[in-house]
Image 1 (tube, rainbow, N blue to C red):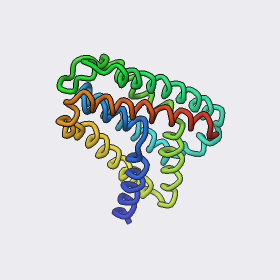
Image 2: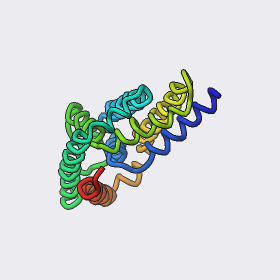
Image 3: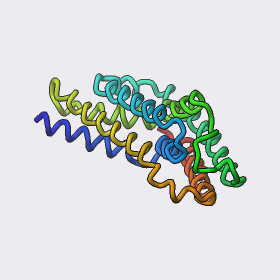
Length: 205
């Protein structure tokens, strides 16, 4: 039963975390630039683990009782995604040295990068619905301490994914040594952030 609960948590967590999202796009870009990758990976893992444990601990029901909070996060998250998408669009339009892939200079201080990373997490209401509510609900299938075994499996999925995404991105660097590749990536990020923002605004939680 312990192994079954751990594997269930691992696959459930992986299914929710690996799906393309704004946070993953941000981690990928930081990994490609090799800018504060450790800080970004630790922040993403820490936030995910905290939310997973909160959900398994029973916070999921409380989150559903705070519709106004989720709506506030919905509009705040949409505004942040639009702002970040605009920045990516401007980078894609201008091109040039700001998109140099070969070095890790520029791109914001560690504090700025950390704040942006946390914003992608805490301003996204779907993060709470996925990790706190959904994983928390799934964990109730397991009695007693098996709930925490399920949570441990989900946490392992988070750690493995963000480490692979952040540190594995460097394998793509030969492609991104060409400025045009960065312009394409930033254009995709701009479009992606814009679509996510519109979905948050147009689809009530």
